[in-house]
Amino acid sequence: MSRSLGFSALLPAVVLVLPLAVAGCSGDPEPAPVPRPAASGQPEDPTAAAGLDEVAPGFDESPDGAPPVSDADLDDAALTALLRTRASAAGDGHCTPDQVVVSLEGLDSSLGHRYSRIVVHNTSAKECVVEGVPGIGLRGGWGSRFVPEVAHSDRDLNGAPVSSRPVRLAPGERAASDLEWTGELAGSESEPASLMVVQLAAGQVPAAFPARVGPEVIDIGQFTTIRLTPYVSMP
Image (cartoon, rainbow, N blue to C red; front, side, top):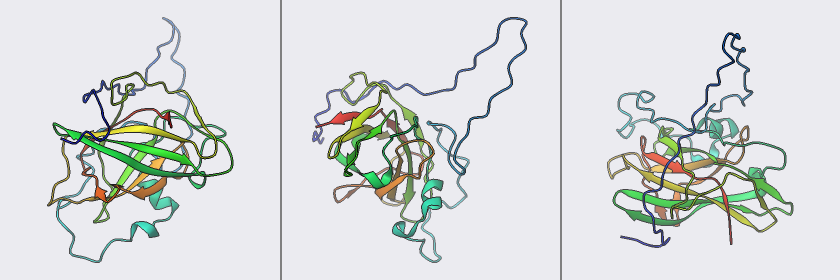
């Protein structure tokens, strides 16, 4: 068992972010719902159930036709369409993909669970903010959009509470969201993960990077369960 990240608690408590219905006073008519604006083509919620009914038969078989468009050739609309969930926060001053480098760092595993970190490095000359939990999506090597279950946790991979407060990143500073995945992991005969997209703030086009930790492809598959935490600052 690898211990490269030194996590002491392997099964963090998970809090699913669910919308709360607020009833009016007794006898008062319920207020009309207020629509929440969202960027076209982007998911409405920051969590998602596994999309078992969203894939066509044969999704687990390597296609015989022409190879898919390469990850590097996907445009903003295609990257946005890969998002499974949106970022939980938005606002002025939030980091944008052209200000940062996003990557996976560290890899640990135990009892069918995998652990890594989504790291955001401010490489610009201007301070920016990350806040809450990032949006996430994955593309497979056969060109498929993965439909994993995505949940949020209010505890880090060591079991310590994590706040959703904004993290200000001066030039050169970094922040991370803990990433855990488990359940139906990808195997040797299934479509490997190729590209990960991470939305830094709701409404943005996501940042895209290879679904790897160093040279190692992560074994997130079509229906893997993913858990994310809010950003915390890193050394």
